[in-house]
Length: 250
Image 1 (cartoon, rainbow, N blue to C red):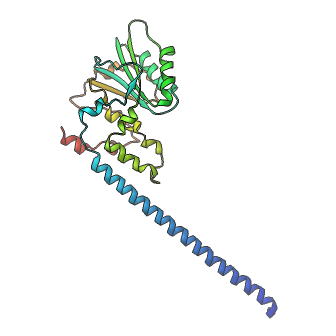
Image 2 (cartoon, rainbow, N blue to C red; image 1 turned 30 degrees about the horizontal axis):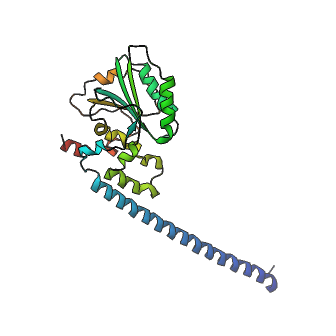
Image 3 (cartoon, rainbow, N blue to C red; image 1 turned 180 degrees about the vertical axis):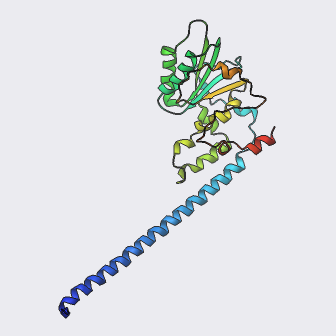
């Protein structure tokens, strides 16, 4: 049956209201999309500027006096007589995992002497010093174990232009894991300058338990290469190391 004019009017009004609401929603959605694109573009430009700044400063040479700055303070003076040093670095506030890495290293080595240097943040330094003093396993008199707990490496690293440029990425939305911007995350690249006396440095992550003898790595023939690393199929080394630059400095 044909609809009466009076019945047709409410439906027409409802249709008009729905159309107007749809247009309003579409305009709001469009504004949000435009705003999101603007924020993304601004973030990209900020990232490019930071990346450009980092590239300008990344390859500055490290002067000898940088490693002699007085920012690093240790519970025990680092013995400069050791040619092999095991080093760890972490700004985690929990000292237990750091201690586990050190203790397992000491418990499984046959070396007569082992020098360990732990670079940590202020939050973990006191606890780690107590753990080392009270609970570190010392395998009799056969192991001369020397552990130095050091703080201040982060302040030392902040003096490097590349580290300062890296901090510009702190507000970037493209960096999802902000902890990766910590100076401690790049400590391994600077340890040869901080521990310049050592002929070889073994850098360990602080989330490991050592089950083998690090003396094997201390004696390993590197074939004239400056460094060796564990293969990791989840990582691409060229993301971290500029191989053409390293080749140019050979």
